[in-house]
Image 1 (cartoon, rainbow, N blue to C red):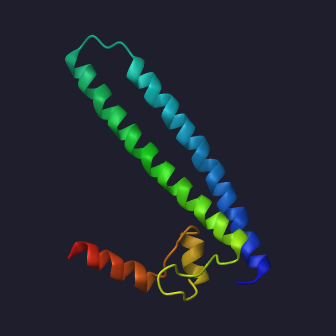
Image 2: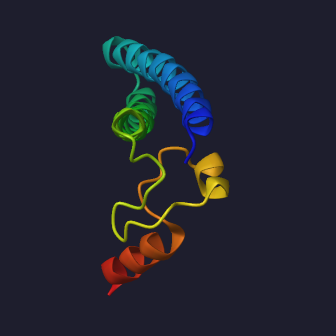
Image 3: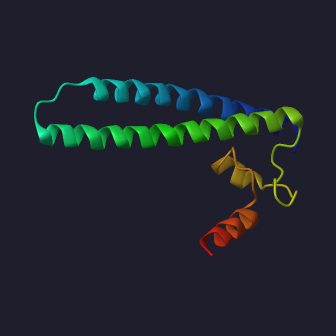
Length: 118
């Protein structure tokens, strides 16, 4: 991958990381507010528990993606961004445009998912 294209993906990843970090902080704050709310009714408590679980699940997913973005940014710095971590082949740019923090080509990703299901 050429330097110009790597820099384009660095910009995309950096912006995505910034947005996810902001969203993660909002979710964390909302979860904290939800945790501290005084609700007298058992139904309100059940709703609060469901909301808290949902917020934590979304927050965990955002945190996982942020970690993957950090790895992708490191790979850009090291010069091996866009290379499948499994087979060593180039990951198509079209895949990286959809999932800029992808570590695997489609074939390796599908194979690993099939193996997990077996």
